[in-house]
Image (cartoon, rainbow, N blue to C red; front, top):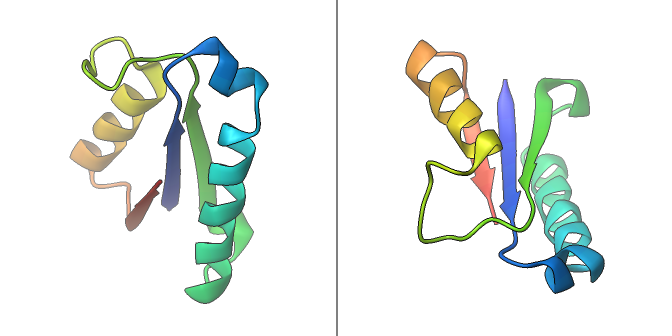
Length: 77
């Protein structure tokens, strides 16, 4: 499985287009790398500081999946 990970730090970025732009850029990478969408999962942490990782649920899930060996690749914006 391939994963995409996006994150923004505050509510104004959540309400704006930042997460949508990040999603589109990651999906463009799927096309460029011939990765079928069914082999890809997008993870998003909205309103989470980049300073810490312990409060980012989707990030923690991704780390667990990597540790288990379930990840072929990760695209991070």
